[in-house]
Image (cartoon, rainbow, N blue to C red; front, side, top):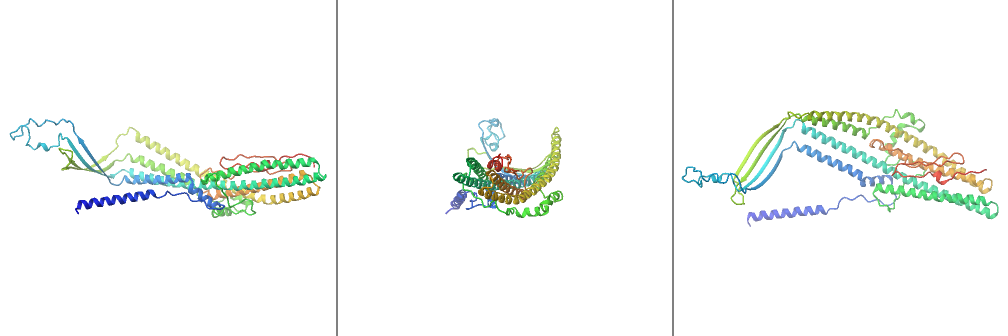
Amino acid sequence: MSTAVLRSHRVFALTVCALAVAVAAAAQPSPQAPAVPSGPLTLEQVLAIAEARSESVGIAQVGVTRTEGDAVRARAAERPQLSAAASYDRSLANEFQGVFDNIDFGNGSGDGSSSGFENLPFGRANTWRATLSFSQNLYSGGRIGAQKQLASLGRTTAEQSLVGARAQLRYDVTQAYYDVLLSERLVEIARATLDQAGATLQQTQAGFDAGTQPEFEVLRARVSRDSQTPVLIRQRSNQEVALLRLKQLLELPADYDLRLADDLGGVQLPPAAVFATRVAPVEAALGPTQTAVSALRAAPLPERNAVAEAGTALSLREAALKAVQAERMPSVSFTSNYSRIAYPTNVAPVFDRANWSLGVAMNVPILTGGRQKGDEMLARADIDTARLQEKQVQELAALDTRSAWAELIAARAAWEATAGTVQQATRAYEIADVRYRAGVSTQLELSDSRLLLQQAEANRALAARDLQVARARVALLPELPLGTGGTAGAARPATGQGTQPAPQQQQQQQGRGQFANAAAQQGQPQTGTR
């Protein structure tokens, strides 16, 4: 078998292999989002699912990849450049036609047929060119170095943005997670209150049937029981909204049966396991709740990602000034061009001629009409702005950090204070229920004690939610962007005073969940004499 045939078979086999590899790569399934574990989900599992499926984190990751391309492009400027070009020209008419027809070149003929000028390139009908061009920067005046520094700082900025995006997502998911737990707890409280009101109605109806209770007491008990039904419906609606918000962050369908493993009804409330290692040193540095406020100023501030971003922005502006100043410097480059040329009489080329040149080029800016000066003025102004912004961010970061610590102290104090309140309200309701059944107290006293118990339990649940969210914020504080909201993501139930608690309702940010005032919904102001 001839060498040409073997070569053709080899090329064909390589082509088939390359196509097979390309088809196999295309057939590989794209990476899918991780599956949701079965059963109730912990906070750590929820955070892992959200981070793997989040669009905001994905956009930040693409930004990091984009900066890698900028770095490759900046490094390419200092490396050799080689390009190839091929061209074909067909001349239909030119100025050299008939120039040598009537000239005697000394050979006895006037047509120049044997003079050798038929091989000259002038007036050829077909021209083929194949060219290789080579260039290498010898001196750029600092332009390439400045571009490489800008690309490196751009990657740092993208990585810092990715850190901030992940922290913001984790904080938002944590808020949504505990909003769902709070809504579940408020539903339980509303359902228990409805059951208590129903039991009171049955007791009063039995007394009325026996002739020991007037009809007025039966009507009061029925109205109190019926008033709890819309409250329960409202709390269930709030629970559904909170679940939809969390499902949206987890990229889950609206009809997915999402269940959570934690609850806010326990006696103890340790920090979430995913944040415990970061929260414990902060709480230890702040000390007990009674003296924690005085420790706010003395506690050392952590390093913030937002401050690092501001410092990187300043470095970017300084590198941009260097790039602008490098435009004043000359640039030197080496070039080489090698061409093979053919002038066939027919279309098929025979490359029997060659051109090869070497050269060094230098470019020196002499007069720019003020453009260079204007660019430098703008670059210096950007540096001044970035320096002031960095100082501003440092001050805001210190304020934001101490504000987060203060919210943690307040949330911890509220949680500790509600423990005894629930116990006392539970005991008061038990005593009032016994007194009412014995006939020594009125239904109004029983309703008031039930409302106070409901308020205490709702306050306890809200304090637990706020404490866990405050801990999450403190744990994520080094990476969180500035201006991240506080812990108040649900409406705070009013703390009743006397027998007529005033209804309150607090508006919250969209997407954080809205929970109506438990005290106002589950108990109406009552009047009467005792």
